[in-house]
Image (cartoon, rainbow, N blue to C red; front, side):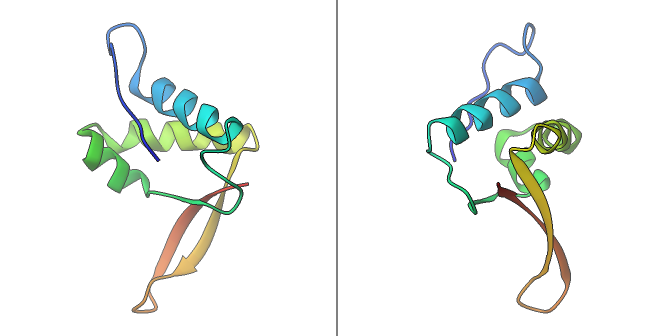
Length: 85
């Protein structure tokens, strides 16, 4: 998944992330079952606030494009994955 942020003064981070993920889903760059990076990981990669990514994911979830799924990491700790529907 490739996300590039552009002019932040006219288009907020969450909207850019949401739109780019939507486009990648519709273009089949992201397929059903693909796991998205965690909000914290994507926020760190883009050097933005985690809340912006959480809002984008929430809106994508409301649109029925992604889903949250609880799982466990390799140490058995609970983990939350976001997957393309």
